Amino acid sequence: MKENDALKKDQPADEQSAEEHAERMKLDEADQLTAIVVNALEEKKAINVDVMKVTAKTTLADIFVVATGTSSTHIKTLADYVEEKLKEVHDLRPNHTEGLESRNWVLLDYGDIVVHLMLEEDRQFYNLESLWRVDTHR
Image (tube, rainbow, N blue to C red; front, side, top):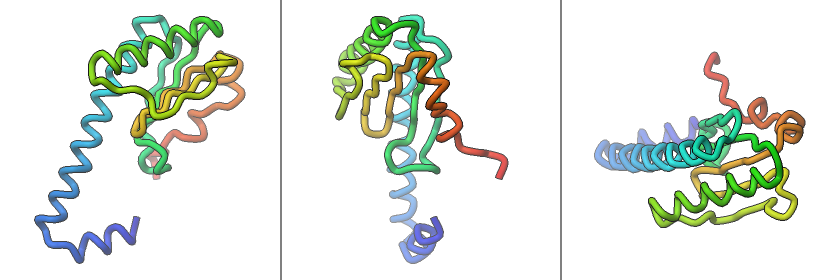
């Protein structure tokens, strides 16, 4: 982070503002896509949908969406519906998908957004929220 700040100090102000603007645009788009994901999950009755902004903790993604399904069939339905909605609204397909065979933890990777759909037991065991939640009290 300090290196980025030092690099920004060496950049002309117009380049800094262009970079900052591009980053804001990227985050705004990620927020819009996240809203579509959350709505799709809620429409199909996902349990305990949680959105975590993880930009400060990883370069893997900006946002993790975690939701619980009641059965492997429900998780498959949730995954299919998220894919359908993002394809329909933004013509997006996941860059990578994992877990569709076992259906106890399905991961849909859309680059800036990663969707985790899990059975309750797996969600409690892996406790992604404790690993990835950004502590805002520091």
